[in-house]
Length: 369
Image (cartoon, rainbow, N blue to C red; front, side, top):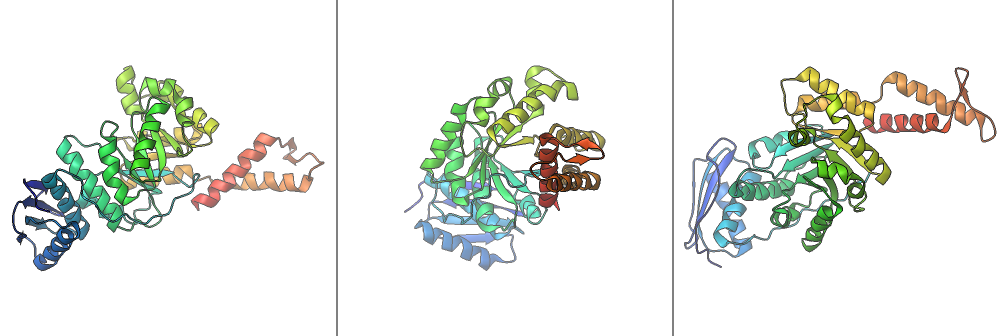
């Protein structure tokens, strides 16, 4: 198969590379890299896999192998005017109720930052395909696909936030990376989720779903959204975008109702509630207060944008020692009382809600230790 037009992907900067594909007879030219022969071999092997004949020029600046492969596939797809096939990553499905305290978000077209997420300690890693411009979105799809195929993120659950308007294009490519979950922004109805499910089925992708509520319409329909599919394991709320539509200011009072509505709908559907990102990295005190409010409301986790935010989230979502000790005493009293007796703690009767809360605290303590 020969290419009939030029394709280009990437940038000339440290940790990245610019790859150009043109019609030709298979010449490979690598510049700006000490490991030129290694890069040539990567390119040659991929061209043989695709059975494509073309000339390739690569200008690399300390780019890792997964970056080169992602940029090459993006350039090849442009030159061929069709998506290129790839091996599908092997990855098991994670449990529905696994820990999702911290969900680290990273733009999908920043390869030089992706390796930093390996071993960073976040419960979940989310690659964001919401880029400006079709070319950058195209490149981000292939870069995320390559990262999912080639990097080992340990125990972190791997998510991809797609674009609703290009859901088919996004999922068709990243399905080869086989992420644990797909995050759908701007969901306003159960139908929005059904559309994504059909695309996933066509792409042979079996992943969890996380709808993001960020509009008044989404809040109005939150109950049907949270219960729309068995694939939904969590519902997220993005306050920043919501406030831009309502005209409100970022205060607790302005967000209390929509946050509470999302939480109640999530609990009613048996799924988790996740709060959106706090983007002002300079307001550390305000971020800590924001996290504590989410814990007090009953949320299960929060989107974070850096390691500092992640540490704050982990610290606040973990039960305190006094809570754990009290929970143990409550359950000990319940067990001692047996089925017939009334359990007491400090002279006060223990009801079902106290017992349920105690069991939840000990479960969280076990998960977060």
